[in-house]
Length: 448
Ligand SMILES: Cc1ncc(COP(=O)(O)O)c(C=O)c1O
Image 1 (tube, rainbow, N blue to C red):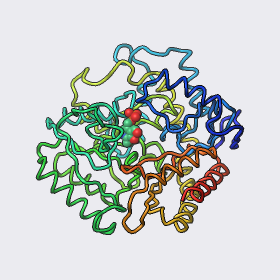
Image 2 (cartoon, rainbow, N blue to C red):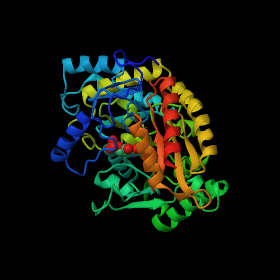
Image 3 (cartoon, rainbow, N blue to C red):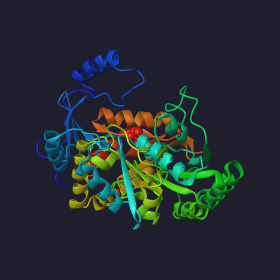
Image 4 (tube, rainbow, N blue to C red):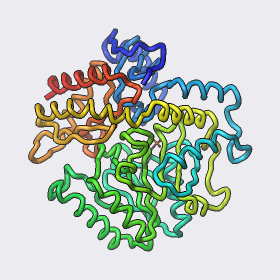
């Protein structure tokens, strides 16, 4: 993929990370911005593109984070820039609910075509992932006339009140923010690495636990929807065993329960296909998307079966900014890029480059307990004792810090804070990927 012009695709360290100008700005941030909004790596960015972030001290960092899986097509991707600039000059807002515009309809048409399943679909656009999830729940309740929503251990669905209830992890997402929305129930996740009786039993036993707990504690006839991330994101890139999702989908279908696939982190080419459900041949009733959809502009969507989406009364869905024309222009530019540059194939190529290197590191460092993920959504889970699988959040933080100091932007994740995750933009060059992996290996050597 051709990186945007103007930014040399090279790591450059001119100062310590963070540099003095970033440190100065960070001091201002601390007196101006709520302490509740923290930053993982306080280098202040001036420009970005390809696989590089340029900070205000002139350092050039390698990006293995994509702003948490958002800039899949790269920052300021040329087709996104072109369409957004033209749209800003034409008009910035009318409110689709008042006087509509073509770009919203075009994004909905693209989503209906690209998401899993050949059935007739409809879409509705929103501003953030959490807002899309909230609306998927509203739609599911409206269509089924039922109230219960079933979510999984290790799930992350957002930070609004309803989505905090769906999110599994207390710190930092839920702590002291309750009470939460009711009629949310939680079942075990099929997490092969940590399945108590071993990964080989995970698919069957997790499915059995899902069915029996849902029956005993909620009741099928009370359940509007089951919501699942096909690969869990913030929970630590947990990939359920092959076939598990399809069994959940079948059970939902047999019981009149809607399946909501939250593909906010996994969607739009990230996992080596357009959507993670595609790998498993799973067709959800509703799918939520955001993040990678619009090349960095805030946009989110719910897409689903026409009869489900159309069951909602007129005026029941919407919002002032939902499907803003500039964000829609960004989405049309991003989707055009994904098609023109065959980005699912690029994500698979990144996996092919990454995984052997990570395997080598895992062979060398027993602290790497598990290596998992798909496409350009890969992670390693770190443990202090490989037998007991004791989570090692301290080592994870140390490796992360060492990567940052060397000019590589990495992110952590996981219920136990012991997962290092890699989400490079698909516009990154192979040279930067290799250099980033070298830095990761050095960070391990320095931290264990
Ligand atoms: C799977 C999933 N769902 C929902 C969300 C919430 O999206 P947003 O932060 O845009 O509200 C996220 C964000 O990380 C996510 O990964």
